[in-house]
Length: 234
Image 1 (tube, one colour):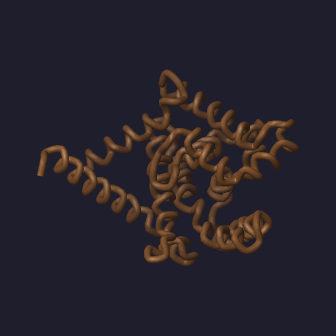
Image 2 (cartoon, rainbow, N blue to C red):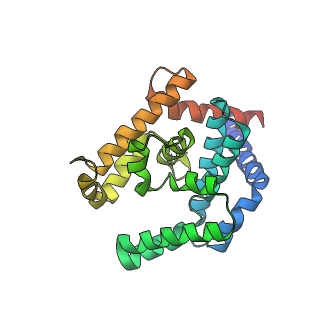
Image 3 (cartoon, one colour):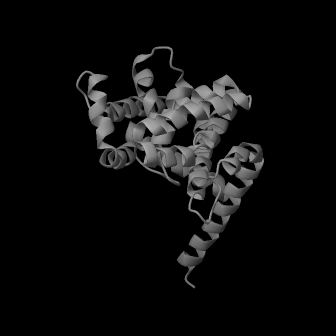
């Protein structure tokens, strides 16, 4: 085996161990994943939990680099871990009843969180990743910076990969073209997806400014680099 292949295998082993350790530290947050069926590996739903885990590590990493408070950092991690706990039910409802069915289940998910005494600030951060939050993200001056960060992080976390905002938005625009068109009435004739691109660029600019990066396009790569460093340091 060549040194390059061996080095890659060593990195993948360290990566698995790092993410497993992070998951164990936040094990209680995965109870809802198990209860609502997104830990089922044989049915292909575990990729949802894996997505949440990667997003949580990205949230933890970015919060640390931005020098956010310990409470803000923990809230972002918890919100990232929980934000798709009900995704299986939402997708199944969408297949049966379309967008209205999915929106009904999204409301049901909020009720479940309240019943389980999930703190309101966590629920607010979780809601910030939903497509229905975009109008508030771009128009409400009271929107917290951490909410904008969560919206941005969910946009750049494509399954278990950190990508550019445009890459994931392009993917969803192809998949949910109707959402883009229906957004025109809300966003003064602009497609929902165009507004999403503008919003993520603005958030990326703010992150880049605080991190002293040259441009917003550098942010996803910065996060990937910092996560890689954490993996290698163990």
